[in-house]
Length: 408
Figure (tube, rainbow, N blue to C red):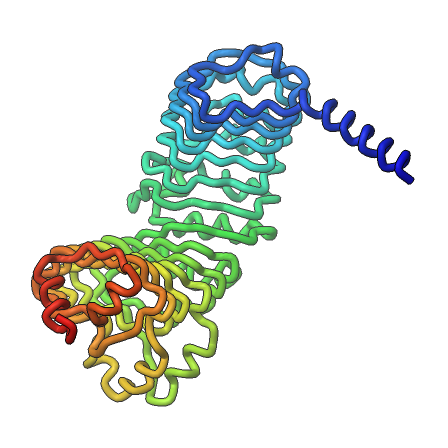
C-alpha cells in the first residue's frame, strides 16, 4: 500500500512539474514591458496584472494560451498584431488601464469567451467585434469615455450570458448607428435578442428608455445593477419589483419629485414579505434636486449601503407625513437593521432621518456632512462609542449627540 501511495505521489509531482512551464505569473513586480518572448510559447495561462506596462509593441506566438490578465497596468496602446497568434485565447482582462483606442487585434480572437474592458478610456467599439461569436461575458462597466457602440453589435453575441454596461456616455439625440443614442431604449431592443442572458448591469437615461425597459419583463429577472438618470416627476417604486435579483440601484441627476410607493394600512408587512427588494444591498441617490424624501427604503430589508448626496430640497429620509397611518407598522419592521454604511452629504434642507431612534445593529460607518438643518441622528452616543462606529459628521451634530448622552 505504501508503494502505491509513493508511486502516486511521484506521479503527481511529475505532473505538477510538467505544468509549471504552462503558467506564467508576474504580478505587481514593476514590469515596464512584456517578459522575454521565449517564455510565451508553451504557456496556457498568464497573469501580468499590476505592473507598469504602457505600450505593448511585440507580436508573440502563443498557440496554447487560454487566459491572459493584463489588468491594472498603465497600458495606453497595444499593437494590433499582439493578439495575432493566440488562436486558443478564451479569457482576456484589460480592465483598469489607460487604453483610449480599442485594440483591433482582439477581433481575431474568435474563441474568446470572456472580455473585460471595464475602467478603461476606450471611446468606441468597432464593428469588427461581431467576429467574437463565442463571447459569454462582456464587461463594459465604468468606461466613462465610451460614447459609441454600433447598433446590432450587442445583439450579435448570441451566446452572451453576462453583460455589464454602465457609466458610459448616453446620447439623447438621433439614434444613427449608435446603440448608446436614445438613452438606452435601442439597447433594450437588442438585449431582448439575447436568449441566454443571465446577469445584466445597465444604465438608462430618460423616462422613455426606462419605460421601454419596464415593459421588457424578460430582462427584469436578470438585472443585478440598475443606474437611472434624467428621470422627471415621479417614479413608482413598485414598478421595479420584478427585478428580484437587483442588488444595486443608482438614481442620479434627475428632476424626480417623488419616489412613490402606494400602499394601504395592513399592506406593509405583505410588501416586506413579498421579497420585492430582498437582494437590494446598495442604493445611491445623487443630484435629485427636487426629491423631498426616500421613504420607500424601509421596504428594502437587507440594505447595507445607502448614499444620498446633493439632493437640495430633501427634508426627511423617511417621511413621517408619508408614513402617517402606518407609523407603528413601519417601526415594527426595524428599518435599516443590516445597514453598514450610511452617507448623507450636501443635503441643505435635511431635518431628520427617522422620527425615532433605531438600533442600527450592523452600522460600521456614517458620514453626515454639509447638512446644516439636520437636528439629530437616530441613535445615541453610547451606541457609537460601544460599537466603535466610524463617524464623519459635522461638529454640531457630534456635540448634540454628546449632550443627549445621559453619561455626560
